[in-house]
Image (tube, rainbow, N blue to C red; front, side, top):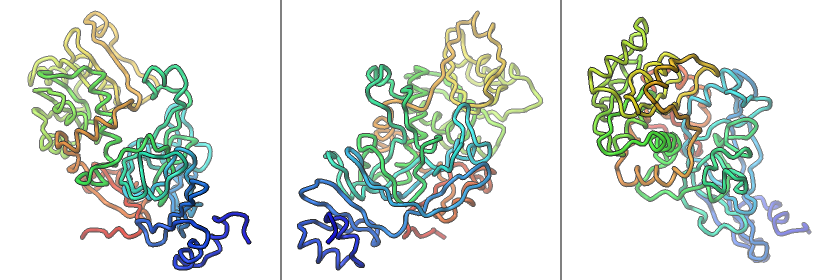
Length: 406
């Protein structure tokens, strides 16, 4: 006989046998969202085991080498939950690791599962988890900190030196069938909030943090540089914060048109042949100097424009990560006391982002332009990279029973 009920149960060849055998061992077998999975709860051990046939995962082995691999189904430890993944959005950082292998000091040195904008259904719970149960639909805040350093205790856990962030080397991401994560960084979704909206809480949280850092409030005039996914969520969040006028710039006319649909008051197509002061003057012609500017493109010229377009005493928040070092008009910023602030991901923003979506204050649904199955991950990444078909946010569906809509 096996040394534990779990080892014994693993010898069963079907769910029916598991149920029959479980009744003799005083354990409960709970069918999960997927028919191939059984969640096994042992009353004496207070632990959970999952038996599944597949944990197909999208793995970045090295630069330009993204493939699908079968990996072991992870088990939740103390304070963790196992999640049957449903929706994972592709972020620009995912594409950057795929094509460049690094972002700043975060360097891909070993194979890594990609993906961090994600949601799914709790399929197993670890010891001590009381706020979530099997079957709960959750959005996953992809980074978790040590909880004990000075930054964590001050409430700025995004700056924790021991932060473990999904799909940032060396930590695996969540583009897979099953994923394990600390329960306190998983947020239960209301019934009317979709899995896709849950996945988009990640980029929306970036915008919430940026708008907080910028100090956007009722009556603000805001400039957003860049109309990609991050720029668009900043546009919508600025409006939700009370901004009365938002101008957004980009080189892509299609994305600017989307920005207009989402509430931009003014859209300006960037002419690369013109200098940054010229573009700043066009912004001022539309709405006057910006009270707050949010730079989302990472382009050096756009950073310059944001400085010139921000009013004296105003604030510029830099979200986009471009070159490691850039030149910028520091004297113009200094003599006009333009505050330049950086942001790194977000902190304590997921509950606010969820509230914005759940209340209808922000509608992220129009951002999703393309859908793919997990088995189509490479095609999905290529679509996100090229922007083919007007791609803004590409969503990958990890559940085996997902049916592509025609």
